[in-house]
Length: 191
Image (cartoon, rainbow, N blue to C red; front, side, top):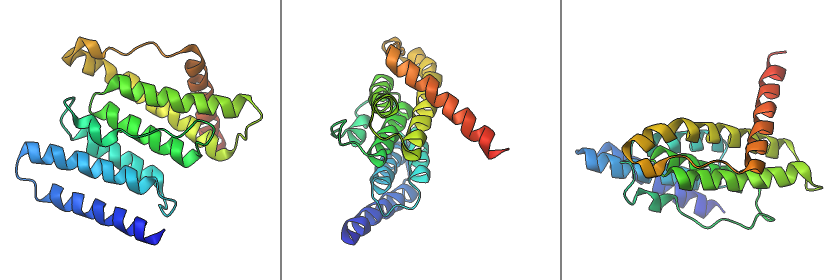
């Protein structure tokens, strides 16, 4: 509803104003996490015209936050049941995963990315609808999984316990298929 969307936009505006007024590194880091969290909220709304921009910006702002600690609290949330998960729900979960990756919660990010990959695999391999929207979600699974893999070594240098765990075989297969979808989409765009 419009009132909820307005409230979320006000919350985002307030978070950005707080960020602008930051006068210390700690204040900047805290405010950046707040902006990232608010952007994820906006992306979850049907009124959002471009959730991809919100998700990308959320990860950028999260990256400005301090690493580890209790910064993951803003990105925790309930997961819908896999049967009821919509493409928009899946996108927001991937946004949370990307934000968690940015603040070096590698295992949590990997879990969320794997969770969405399993839903994509279910849609791709069963009689559940495999639409263009789910294909885009699958491609984003590939992108987020790749960024997790690229971030993990630097996180592990800071803390060896953050070494990336092996992806489950079905998740690896979905990531591989999503990469093929991404390549086909780019190829089709330029032909």
